Length: 194
Image 1 (cartoon, rainbow, N blue to C red):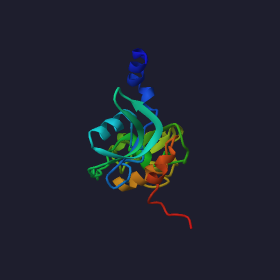
Image 2 (spheres, helix red, strand yellow):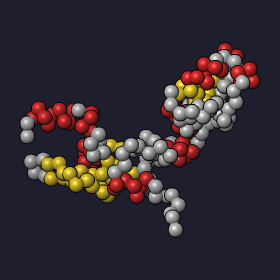
Image 3 (cartoon, rainbow, N blue to C red):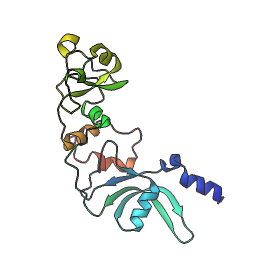
Image 4 (tube, one colour):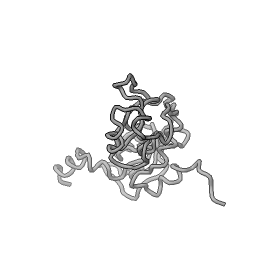
């Protein structure tokens, strides 16, 4: 194999997106749903070699070293349980996830920003209880006015989400690509059809 090709394949971040491994906690649940807990295949092979994970599903493709041939892992499970975080970080992404990627005034999707329900100019703070996802149009309409003076109403009041709530919200937004070997582990606790 040409060493320039091999080096560029390993170093190219785009190449790492091929054959990702779904990472499950020791209880066989994904570490996270959104974003989905995925490792590049190199990390999965390394963790398996170091005996930190068990491989429970594999791709048809293999990687080779001079002495070994290994099928690329598609699902790995950690040998030691990682305790999920209880505290939810106040980030733009988590805010949008809490609000289901919808404007909390008109319900539209896309072109989202965030808005202070009680404007900062009127003493409002940047917190879970005062910030909502908003489309640009509604955000401009509201400006630094109160809800009453802007004529807008909230679809639901802002609040601090729980970690489990955000994990469940993340399940509503699957990634564009789901490998067939992942499906049994992503929705294992969903109700089965009779």
